Image (cartoon, rainbow, N blue to C red; front, side):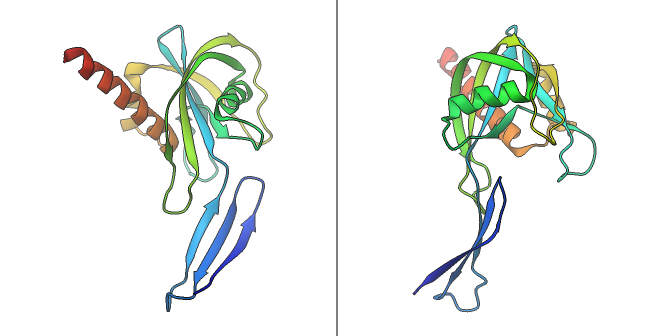
Length: 180
C-alpha cells in the first residue's frame, strides 16, 4: 500500500516524476511533470490591435507561429507581476488595465500547472530584454483576424487557444446579456 515517487529528470523549467503504485499489479505507475504556473496576456494597442509574438519553437517543426506573450510565474511573483514582466521582456511594451479573464490547467493528464490569462492595454513601448535563446518578434493583428489565423494554422499554441477561448466565452456571455 505504498507509493514510491522518484524524480527522473529536473531542469530549471520542470521536473518529471514517476509514481509507482504497489497496489496496481502490472502497472507502470504514473508519470507527472511538475512546473510553475504560467501567465499569458492578450494586450491591446489603441483599442483595436492585439499583440502577438512570432517565433519558432524547437519542439514543433515548421515555420514560426503566433502566440500571445507568456511565461512562467517566478517563485516570488504573483500572476499580475509575472504578466507585466513577461510582456516587457518579450516585447519591450508596458501594460496597464490588467484584468484577469480566468485560468485553465494546460495539460491535466500529466501536470497540474495552470495558465492564468489576462487582458491589458499597451501603455508604453520600449526595448525588449528577451532571455537567452528567445527570438520573438512583436506583431499586431486585429481582433477579427484571429479566427482566420487559427484556421490557417498561424496560431497553434494550446495556451494561446485556451486564453482566446476564455476571452471569446466572456465576450459571448456579455453579448447574450445585452440581448436579454
